[in-house]
Length: 265
Image (spheres, rainbow, N blue to C red):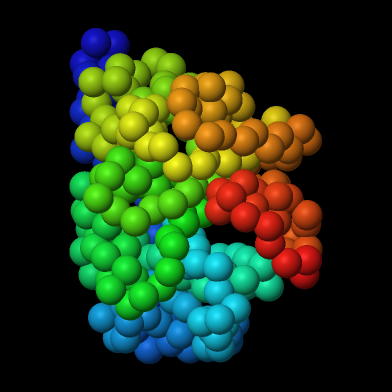
């Protein structure tokens, strides 16, 4: 039994990235075609870092740019619904693609993803994208929190859907028989990363989340020391939160994150 357990622990350590990251992968031509089918295009070009709508808002109508940081499965193209939800509120929307996902080269991991997203934010800043906000879901919340920990970045506010306090607690809830605290390479300690962030943060919790325990989502919210807002979806599961672009909570969340009054859709 001891040998079996040792092998199990070793396997969990060696293959942990496969348990955390579930990328959809395809060629750049496939990426272009899939994007075009839902009204998107790669940005800034073939060496793309994500997707933007084919038709963007005029500068005089823009309140800022929202970078969407998606969860662990699929790719950025799958999140085209964010454009329908956020563009009518007056935001340019950039769907960020992780390294190793879609047609992007590279490997997925906390260091590589966070470093890459920080570079993307700098590119958008140089492109005069206006105030920048991060809108993240699940794993993306950990990425967004780690990214926002850099005080030199022009990140004004965050919206976090189904976040965690730290990844180790999520992993332990799924694998209580493993010493995950000692095995994890990627920590995604969102409590630590957001401890010095002073911009507004919206935390949207799922009351019936079967992937990230609700108490871990609430624990992150309770740790925040800056402006904060809790939106609670009492009956929502992890993938069942109200993502309908016409839902009123999008406007509620973005008004708090931007500290402004937004137009009615």
